[in-house]
Length: 253
Image (cartoon, rainbow, N blue to C red; front, side):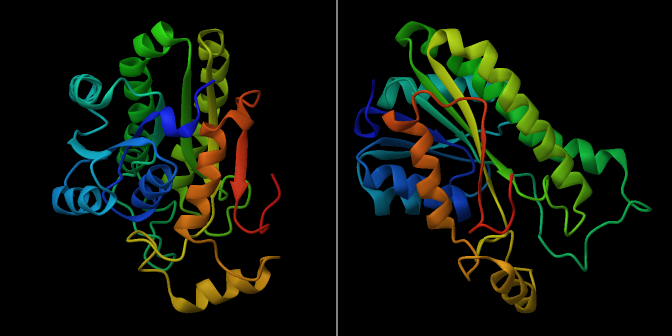
């Protein structure tokens, strides 16, 4: 059973925001961290410089299967085959309820764009890493979801539908990959204080959520990142196909 310090971890969309917090969390535990980015090269390279020599940046669009396969091959050569996949990459999105599209203006292209990154990206990552998982008899796949599936207080239809589909894939993939020694789980967060995606959220909304949350504050990226570590650790070795909601107790699963 691999400890986190023995793992090579690929975090998608890790140049900034929650992905960067997840990369930092794994690095603090001694893991080798592959920081994936699509466009945020400067941010990804700055993060790797901050973390140190155990982190390297790798460019790939997760919706491009060939690019993902090439990235995994590059990571394997540079750092060792990925033991852990953290699928955090998000299609361009702003959490601003006042500016969201309603059902009357939303079309399938909006839905498809979110699903292509959330679900398509997960499929591409699993396909690229599966031979390595099979060879080693070990793997961890951790997807990032949202508590809006359980509590759609703000109807971000396209984003939430894609994350619900990703949650279903997390469940079904756990059955398929389990015989290889691979667990597949989701960490579902609420609004985070603060990332680039949530920067457009009015301050009054943060305060409202904090007031309704048992812990009395809005979850931070660092707090959510720590929960991701659990699923990569030996303590979660018998947990798979699950969704853990990390939002300070605001929503019950």
